Image 1 (spheres, rainbow, N blue to C red):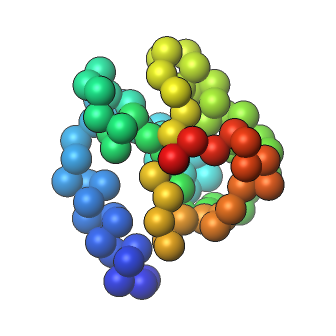
Image 2: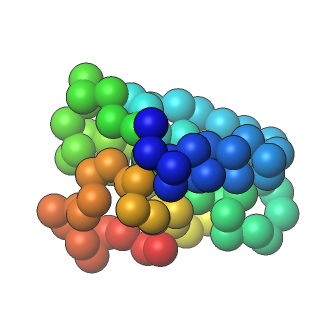
Length: 91
């Protein structure tokens, strides 16, 4: 575990949210507040069981059902480091 990952993990756990759905290692987080951090995907683990394309579809559906923009909390620990469909990523 890298130091960056550890800091990100501690930060994610320190910000409570209303809903967390785990999708193949990514945490999809939603809160009724306006915080971007709480309403964003924490993509720092990759379970490798779902294709990136499918995972992005699930993420977009999760946030669209809640009426908020899909956002990703990107950092050096993010997995994958880039999106093949860059236009869909909102940081």
